[in-house]
Image (tube, rainbow, N blue to C red; front, side):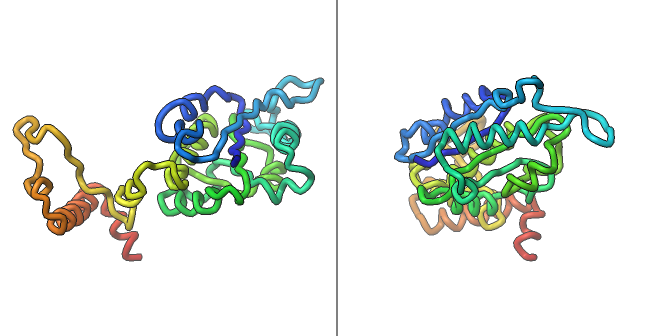
Length: 246
């Protein structure tokens, strides 16, 4: 059973990820996937003489910084010991910190990430959900293997980006999507947005479904969808086309 560990102050954040949608059914073992999410409550690993997980930054400054010793205890006891990874845990675990230094998450990065960690023989994943002004630099340098950024904006914690990374990458895990083609004909594949989609009713508010889509002529449909993908991309995300020509 492949495990995804999440060290967080708010384990309940992840209830919706586990209980709903395609990702949830995969994490519950309903799609043939063998993946389990385990949350670790960071507060359980504070020193006995200190109740918090954070402290004031050396050198001054606004806000608080998450303590390296508390994070280490959560990792070593809440993950390594509980998961029986042993002294060579660094060869068995890949620790991820969602933060602004990381490479920006996109569809290609997502597929690469999934390919690296989707097999049962690959390392288990550990996500560190930061809060406050950040986490102690020493923990980052000693225990974090990869930093990932969702983009140039600030969130109040690492729980939302962790869920986004798990949800988007798991779509490329074997068996998670019922139709393998679903992850192929989507936005951002080949630097294009996805072509427009239509379903019943055939006429809605006076607008008909394009005739070619109900013609049954697969070659014409494929041509139409390719042209529409280009049109939509030019209209909404022309930067993707420039990226493809770089």
